[in-house]
Image (cartoon, rainbow, N blue to C red):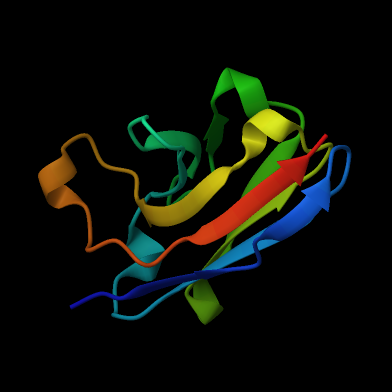
Length: 118
């Protein structure tokens, strides 16, 4: 059973930066496409950044040019560098596989809270 542990969130002023980390257990980290998801109250969890096993990346429009997703297979760790943060970036951030069907997702971790003050 894969376990996901996110960390690195916090309270930051608008314009600041944070670096999120996600460590996964299990043996298949390097063969998976991974993503960072954000959940805000009353909204569905959305994919904000993704990275393939070949290191191709994608971003939702609202974070393009500000967020950078990366991975370190040897450490089974996924990162999200968040720069020029805005209040609308506030939410709980989770990592998981980037897959087309929700049934293929691993069990969610606890997430890490990011709060951006104006």
